[in-house]
Structures are given as structure tokens and as C-alpha cells.
Image 1 (tube, rainbow, N blue to C red):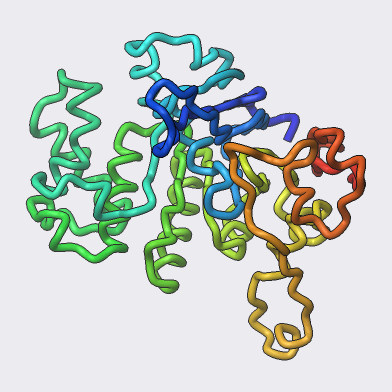
Image 2 (image 1 turned 60 degrees about the horizontal axis):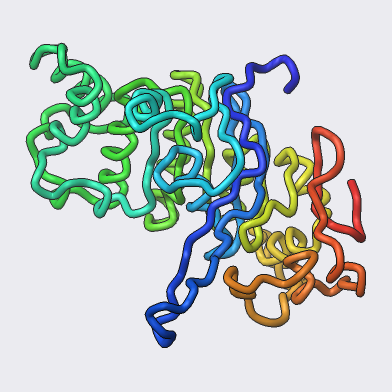
Length: 329
């Protein structure tokens, strides 16, 4: 990993939202929701970083803060040595050529009034207005072939395609500018299982061909294991474990990660029936009023008094880091 080129360096990123109480007085002070609470990581050239966690843990907000779609309260997002949080809108817009995003709902992310040819070509027309019409069409058709779409459907509309095909259109739109990093925000969660495998394999093939780096957000840990080089586990806006995919799935360290992995189905029916699933007790705390100290302590089977007093930080070696007062790598 040390020999690879560092592309992205996220340092103590924090994203907060002010929430007004619907039952409160108009002049009442809004409450603070900490969607992302001090997450740090590094991403290297050609690497795939998986991001996992329960719904509401801050995965998508973290991804959108990296690309600048939501503002960050504090921290740095250093892209190729330049802090994106310090750029004005014009400069940040230029950087978006290098960082693109694939969204969760393939059909909802496409403009129903535009043909797929216009949808895929839109980034080219935005960033390279000097390109002629024929040149744009050639690039669009070449990208359609890369993602497994026939060029002769270029004038059709999104509603004429299946969910898997719509996601291929979204991938083509994201890659038409030849970015260095693609953020995949749960790109297969709305698709059938067989189509999920096709899309994941397509992303891996395009990554090898185009030298892409990926941030892959998903609920399905088996998909994350298949595509990721490293995995970041998030809980209530915090990073609780960061490790290589091999190390994380072979020996999870944080109790939350153990619980997540215990729920992953195993193809062997004998092993599946005999395994023990670690159920998490209680409900997910509100990010408006998170627990003191370790945010996972209210559901952790190992929690002790010290867990309420001190907030743990990610610690360990380069291959495996964990945020827990009771366990270390």
C-alpha cells in the first residue's frame, strides 16, 4: 500500500445538520444532528474502499461530503494534495471531472425527459463545450459499449430500460469524463441478486481497464467482500473499524463488526444452521443525542463503566485499526 499513489486523504471530517423541533417554539434553538463525527481515512490509486453499516450510520452523507454535495462542518478532504473544503464553487466544480458518483436508485437518478444519449453526454457538454456533436456521439457510443449497452438504443428514454440497464446508464454517465475516483452509493441495493453480480463484475472490469479508484457503499457484506480491498465500518457517524478486506472478514475486532458479519448468510446449509448470530440489543440511538463516550456502548455486550467516560479513536497498524477501549488489533 505504501508504494501506491495517495489520491484522497480525509482528515477528521464532520458533517452536522441543524434540526428544528416541529413541536417547539419558533425561536427555540435548533438541535444539532451529527451525521458524520470525525471520520478519517486514506484512499490510494486503483484501490476499492468498502463502506458498511446500518441505515442511518452516515455512509451516504460521508460520501456526499467528500464530493462536496453536502457541506462539512470541520475537517479536510485532501484530493491529490489540495484541500477541497477550501475551494470556491467554480474550482470545486472543475475537480468534479476527477470525482464522479453512481447513485442508489438507477431510474430516479436519470432525467425521464432526456434520451440516454443526452444523459450520458451531459457531463461532456458541461465540461467540454468545445467538442463537436459527432465527437460527443462517438464518445457516448464507445462508453455505451463498455458498459454493455447497444449503441442503437441511444435515442430511447430511461423508462424503456430495466433497473440493471438503467444502472449501466448511470455508470456510463459517471465514467464518460474518465474520472480517477468513482463513489458508488449503494449501486446494487435496488437490483435483483443476479443483476447485482453483473453490475459488480462490470465495475471491477472497468476499474481494471480505466485504472479507477472506488468508494463502494453497501449493506450487503458479501458484495463488499467480493469487490473491496479495504473496508470501513461506520456506526452512528463514527468509524469503528478499518481494515483490509481479508483481515476484517477473517478476524473482526470491534463487537459491532462481529455482529454485522454474524448475520451474513453462509451458502453451506450445515454451517448456516449451526452458526451463532449475535443480535444487537436495543435500538439505534439518535444522532441528535448520541451516547457519551463510545457511541456503541448502549448496545455493546462488552460495555463497561469506562466506555461512558472516554471516546475511543481508531488505533492499530496500517492493515487493521479499531475504535474500542476494550479491544486492540
